[in-house]
Length: 82
View 1 (cartoon, helix red, strand yellow):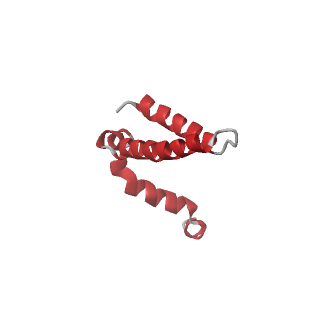
View 2 (cartoon, rainbow, N blue to C red):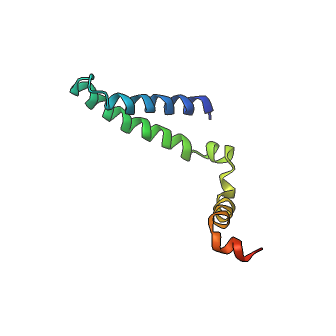
View 3 (cartoon, helix red, strand yellow):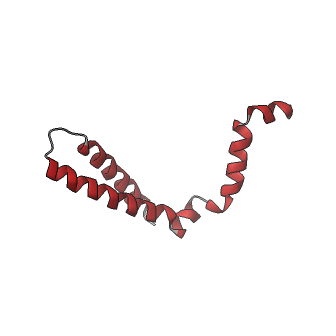
């Protein structure tokens, strides 16, 4: 997995989102950009869901991370543990 590819795709996606909101761009181009946005999202999600990326972020520990996040954000349960 090339992390720079992912970063580049996300940057391009942000440009496309901004460009679709630009009133100076003609409708035909905006329609193209809207389609390109769908394909960029599909490509980005494919990279994020790939086994190599999951290994890179240690996705196997996701449940532990969710439990820790819930513990940290649950004010009532953290008050009881003091």
